[in-house]
Image 1 (cartoon, rainbow, N blue to C red):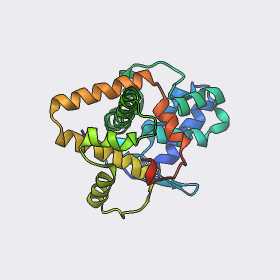
Image 2: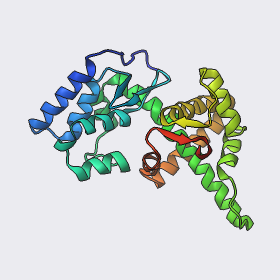
Image 3: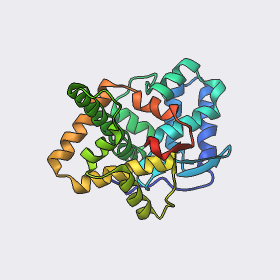
Image 4: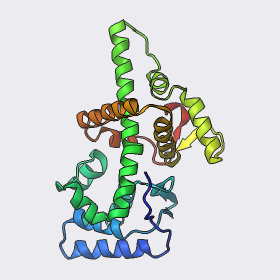
Length: 243
């Protein structure tokens, strides 16, 4: 699903982007439009800022645009309406309605295709796991289970045919990452994208389509929930047991 165009790793893209955003806000442009245009100007695929490392491009092809939006919003925090910013970053509610074509025009074609990779490969994949966990919980209630069951492990088994422990081990072997008991948020996103590709490779097309529809339906029914779940965790590190 990769694009032939890539976000380049350069040293001056962030400066130009931030300068544009600040000036656009001072000139009275709507902050969301200015933000998207600033994202179009951004060039770095990864950076360390205020002691934190941000990776905006997962596996070289999936653009985490909300992470970059969050980073830019913090840079111009005092110039943004607090209520709209909070609704956007924590609840997934942008202040303006916009067509996909307009969004693509504002952030650029290359980043838009990479955004789609991230949406289907990370956001939708997370939603699929949550949707199947919900199914497992409902089945347990109907069956009369009174003790708490491990719905997460069962969801992994149903979707990927393997345990999350084995899948995470295989992912880290593929990436030459150390086998640790903890996982960063960045690595968790990479793992989710890896799971997406694993599912495409190992499931038939009808099953992939059915699971994707299930995840999209879950997102429509739980608008913004997956975004809040990410923010409720520590921004840099989560325990492997909560995967």
